[in-house]
Length: 106
Image (cartoon, rainbow, N blue to C red):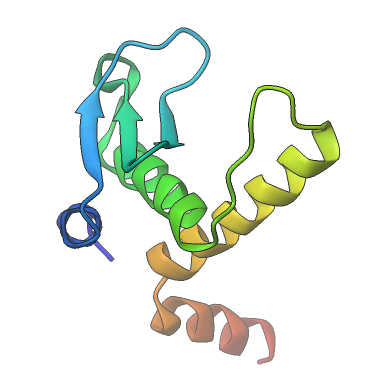
């Protein structure tokens, strides 16, 4: 999936993508009477990085895997795992996965 596809998904879901300067992270999703993804574009260094960050934040949205500032480390890890799983499914094509599988089993 390409960056434009991910942006179209966000648009379809009525998720705003906002450029926002952050200190400790490059992307964050907020779900509070609507959903918004904040991206710190000044610290995003490539197309691939931007695509991966957006895909991960959409993963939080689709798996309803949000957490708060007072969430436990275990809860945060579980929610991040879900988001990363969605990112992997969205960004890695089935053709690539099968290619790796076949190369390994030759």
